[in-house]
Image 1 (cartoon, helix red, strand yellow):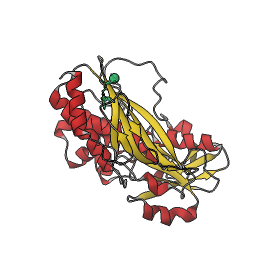
Image 2: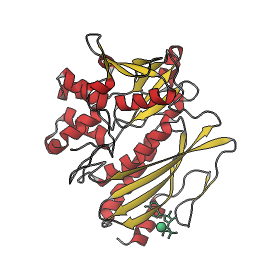
Image 3: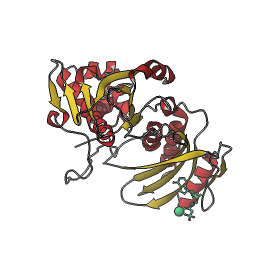
Length: 338
Ligand code: ADP
Ligand code: MG
């Protein structure tokens, strides 16, 4: 396909559905109508083939994930997602590939529990050797209502939605995906299609939040640092899916995936213990308490024997794109493949 054919396809498939999208795809810029009195929350994440997802990922899954990782950031801020732009750089544009990509993007837009639709209102298309998708997401949040990483208080409970470690296990299973059984497939699906959580439920109830993209311990450390406090995490408390338990029976191996594996896109939040019930009711997914905010700085792990250990001594601590010089080929991080 030529570039203009793709834009025709995008224009026909992605007609705006929101009243506050005055102009979507098709002009030099989109025109958006923010709700008076609310704030805009804006985030960007770029996914690169071979780095953030394996080269042979289904285009619908690539589209889904590129959108989902951005919506997850908005959810972690307690923002209502509204608009997206998509920058696509690809070596070629095959029609069926583009159609699948768009279908995956639309599926992600419909997946969260948001009251209003989310519009893809623009983007850019260029040729590049490596397939790259950059998405910008714009959401809205009430003035003063954005949930930051820096608001945690001593005595807060730390909790996560859903389960941890599934996506990291899915990445490990990726080379054998064509022979995957039910549990293996469920883990691989969590890698390719991260579950979107309802960030609106957090508003007014939590002190700090983020989405778990780099690995739980690294992400909890972000909250601790930004709040100038510390955190204690109970390894045994980390929520585990039946699929992970079935595929990775070794407890140490499994807990390491749960504590340090990236790509789960669950929400991690801290709140006054008295808020737990209201929060669990408002979220439409399991909410598991995994630890507590403490005054002394740093992240401490409590192991099965009740022994404390600095998270830094436990092992790898989340993904840092610039932590090492890397090799060739697939080297996925969010989709960590080494
Ligand atoms: P310009 O030359 O002004 O940059 P383009 O020809 O690149 O315009 O884009 C035409 C329209 O198509 C614009 O509204 C732009 O936002 C949209 N668009 C281009 N590429 C994409 C894409 N990958 N996803 C969504 N919209 C896109
Ligand atoms: Mg352009």
